[in-house]
Length: 322
Image 1: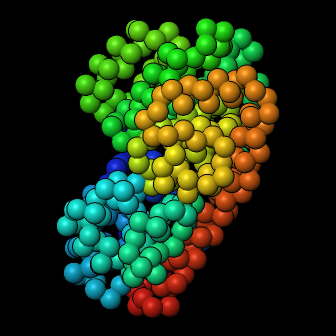
Image 2 (image 1 turned 90 degrees about the vertical axis):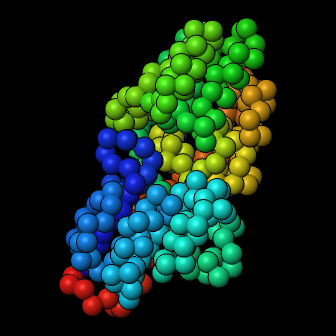
């Protein structure tokens, strides 16, 4: 089948949406489909459209639905879709109606949808290949934060938590991610100058980030909203425990009984968990154990199988060329 895969972000953005699109394109090609990845649909006569992001991809979704109203249209919902845009944005709401299938990236995403929309929704966990652990530094306890600096990520929460750690702590926090505004860059530089435990590395190539992750002790994801974070998949693939803000997208990835949650925006609680992970071997082992169980949901073969099954639901319905 010919598939138009629409992502609002290109390779140059190096964000989660782009990595998802690139991975899905590869899975679908391996399954025998022809896939064209575009930021905006150019009229390519595909038998199926798979779009990421209801609001940002709406123009492509609308144009495809108008030209090919009987051809299947699949829509993958991001964090800003699920937890913001579908509540008050007319384009995002219309995209939900036009889609024949909705895809959410973790099990709690379905909870955000009305029953008639939930009925046409499928869960596809994202994935990352195994990233074998490397020897970690012995002179420090290295904590990573991975993600561009933007409001939805609450990007400085781990930095502020690092200022509350006991003096005896060996924790050093490194943040990988570009600043998406000059104000964010200014804040990052100011924070780095004031907090000796926190270092901002800026934009770093993805393979280098994964290499650094493989020899780290801990990863923090402090987001205010997430559709299903790639960095959680990558951390579990490297057998690196996660501390996460207790919000729906992270609960859907890590499970409700995961022991490493802190309240959204609570740097004091996060600091306590960081210190506990460093100083309490039993707590660290519990984080590892829970993470390894959830890892089984996020293997590439699982993601590929779920994605190709959703597409296969429509293969007999389309009259477009294979």
